[in-house]
Image 1 (cartoon, rainbow over the protein chains, first blue to last red):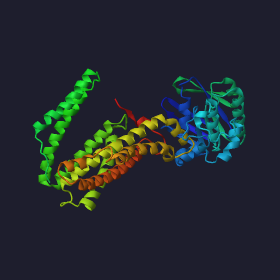
Image 2 (image 1 turned 180 degrees about the vertical axis):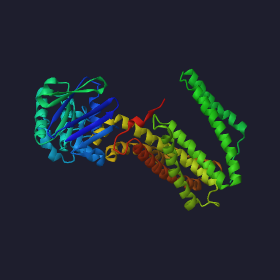
Image 3 (image 1 turned 45 degrees about the horizontal axis):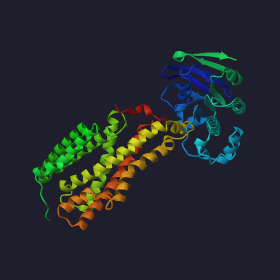
Image 4 (image 1 turned 45 degrees about the vertical axis):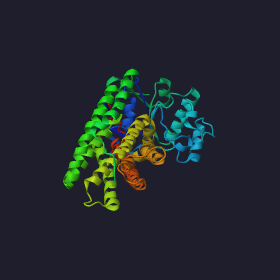
Length: 198
Length: 266
């Protein structure tokens, strides 16, 4: 279980618990702080408050180990190497996941700029899923995808949830939020959060 | 050894070449005439003063005066490094990093040359210590400032890539490695180009100075080679220390990228 108590980052001040295998959707207008919250949970920005995974505080473990357990995926993932396969420590292991997400099986040596925006978004998701994290922090993971590709992503995440992975998912798509979430956090101006149970 | 001595009067005619540059700037509306005038006046004042200062220091041969002059040179060099940055590290850390790296790099190779190769008596003789330090500082400064400039600019440009690696559990060292490598390459480039071109495209200052002073060209070349090796060592040490130090300052103990610590040049 991910336990968040008094998490403070700029105007945000948040407390909540996230059960194993649960998906919470964060919604709210652009600029309200959804990305700030996800980044703070991943400890990518300076922040205050207690965040624990199964009772273990994040300060008790090195930050890289925390992020392998609580993994943030940006809406527009970054690329630190030239080709697709260079972003995976074991490309052969990643290939089934990459192809399931709709990328061609010969895309390994492709340069990143050859990929469309949607392909890059799916590749970023595959890269994050390879970690098999306990908690996924997904920042608009299907914003650049067509409905069919988005359905594949939702199914894949649902499988992970059934294996115990917890998810916090931001989306502007109300229908998607109702499909994937057990709870919806509606964020308002000033960082206040209203919880809607489904 | 004989050389042709110059009087200040002999410099009036060559100085007109700078005036010519100013006229060109006015005619072509380059708006460089003011900068050109300030730079030329600064150069004349600084060099004349340093001439008198070195005369005093060479006569005194005092370890204290020599150390003081060396410290002042390092401080001015670190100020120059900061001034050349488009995006600066904040406040004292920028000056501290520059001064620390200059002192480490230029100080180490100057001491190395004084104690193992030149061996003047006394070893800190300012004629050798300060002139060597000056040449090494000037070149090391270029490597350090280029390395830091590329580091900060690349981190801003490649922020998404660095943070993607961090978000997936990479350490700050793993995440910044591509950027650090680019910065080091840039810092090393001037001395590599300079070594490749020396003798063919350019005749360097130390060598031409000695030849003008009457030293045999073959002997002057040996001095120049020593200087070039020292500069290469100083640039390597200084750039490595500055880029790694800069990378550390722009991250924190929780392996977060801290671009909020960069201040854009005002």
